[in-house]
Amino acid sequence: MGDTGIGALLIRLRTGRGWTQQRVADEYNALEGRAAKTGKEIGRYEREARIPVPYTRRYLAQVFGVDIGVLDRAVAVSKGRQGGDKAAETVPARPVVPSRSGPMSAADAAMSADFARFIAQRNADEFVVEQLEADVARLARAYVSHPLMELYIEIKRLRDGAFELLRGRQHPRQTADLYVAASRLCGLSAHVCLDLGDYDSAATHARTARACAEAVGHEGMLAWVRAVESLIAYWTGRYEQAARLAQVGRHHRAPGSIGARLASLEARALAVAGDRVGAVAALADAERSREAMPGHDEVPGIFAFPAAKQFAYAGTSHLAVGGREHVQQAIVSADSAIRLYRSAEDDDQSVGDLFAAHVDLARGHLLLGDLDGTEAMLGFVLESPPERMSASIVRRLTALGRELGGPQYGGAAQAAHLRERLQHTAVLAASPAAHSPELPT
Image 1 (cartoon, rainbow, N blue to C red):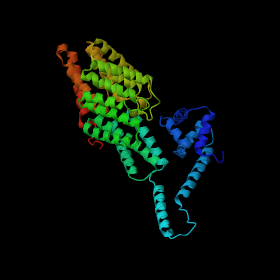
Image 2: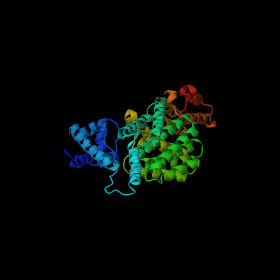
Image 3: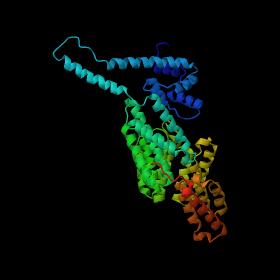
Image 4: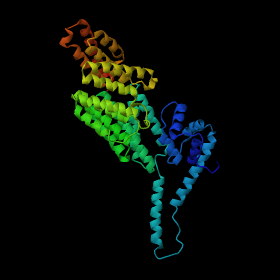
């Protein structure tokens, strides 16, 4: 293996085990303890579009059961070849036969050499880009389960850092990776603002995320950003537009669970807009998308759409469709969402979706005339720290409180007491003290 480059070596090690690139990524993720690597990234290493850095090589060596020195020597071979190629490209050829145009030709060649040196000067190598991608994956997973204010400062710092790198110079493949990372970080910023109820800022971040994704034609992020834009339209009361944006997103050919996410968003928006037939059809589309899901999600957490979240969305949609049968189905869906989230690892338990599913369960019991069940289902929400509640949860609690004040409950003491608790929690969660006053920009 003395003259074997890292790409050929990785291919040999993988095919010798009969593994796919995704299998290598899965084994790597199991050792590292997080779902950061994808089969696509393993393919980049095999094509030598990216050279694995020492940190990555350490885990790859464990995956294949070889000494890390084997991988280090293969990397040295690959870098030596790349260095030789670069030298050949940047040294201008000497003229063999003198001619009257010699000085002009030499000056012209010097300009080419200067440009080659300009290309070689880069502010982001494969290690910088790979570390940025790892940080994005970590934040994306942590976002669903950790307090928002623990994360937004780092999201902003990394996003601004990605912008600064893109204003510098890199190889085209690294520029493309930086655009994708910047798109994801803008998407995270959009979600921060969305959860804080700052919908105008969320829309601005989403547009920038879409621009970054369009710059490199990343279908997965283009579809995901449409989902965020659909959410913004939904929470600003533009339900038909929310449905249209989700439909537009479904036109992108994207891997993973994004198809199920977009269909679920469309179903919820149509249900609230009063299109019961369209909502039911979109729910069926979401289920079909889940069953025929192409490939894996590239990044975990907020960029993925687990089955638990799909059940949570379905519960809200069934409640909006209305009618006893759909209310009962909403209870089943919300209960399934809670059960799946509770059985997931701590970092994958979406606090926001657990709140939403419990509120939907409570409303389902309320619509069936079961006040005891309503109060029991709200216990988890009402006993949780108000600062963990997003703007959308506050709105759900407020709406449910108004519903409890309806004439059908005849001023029942239990309904009045529960309504008072809901209003108190909503006020605490919406107060400036519950969140940092400085929004990410």
